[in-house]
Amino acid sequence: MAPHGNGKKKRVTFVPAGLERKDSEELVAILQERLISLLDLGLTIKHVHWNVVGPHFIGVHQMLDPQAARVNELVDQLAERITTMGGSPDGRSGSIVKQRTWDDYQLGGRDLVDAHLAALDLVYAGVITSHRKAIDATEEIDPVTQDILIEQTESLELFHWFVRAHLEDSAGHLVDADDRTEKAAAASARRATDSPLSAKQS
Ligand SMILES: [Fe+2]
Image (cartoon, rainbow, N blue to C red; front, side, top):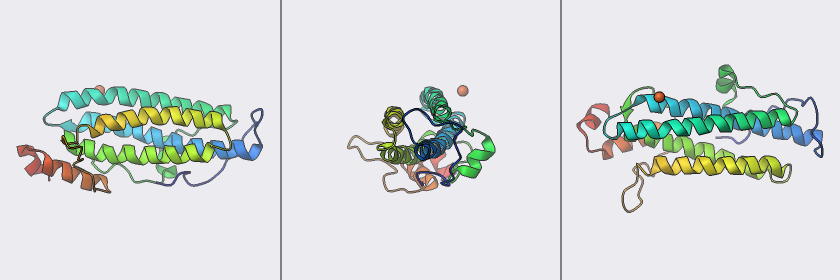
């Protein structure tokens, strides 16, 4: 996942006090890429919320709604930071597809709880890694924006732990530890799930 999307910068309509124009434009580009990422994450969490089946369904179904709600708040925070920086946030669904530098979530429909959570584990890992790159990129330009990203990363990491706690054994080993794609992670989780459903869906 590349840190700053397609790298296209848009001109800002005003320069916030104490910043250079080039810096506010750089900040808007970084924030727009993070906005697209969290919009996509929010949609993916809801998709998982609707499509999990099997044992532990209700717990996971209900765990995901507060995550989606919080991610929605983070989206709003990023969008309003873009406007504060003199930019214009682009939250259109077509723009998500056009501007993102990662593939669509790979599990298209209903699947076992652990299969979706293993795939979501990789989604969170990607989003958090990119948020951390954005934290590094804003270090010198604007510590205020950096502070927002740091606070957001704390929430994302908490939710990542909630997801991973379902995929861990008592020794701390994750069922999808070596997987690099959502499909592979889901397959590992299905193999590890002691359920008659797993045989049908793997
Ligand atoms: Fe719901």
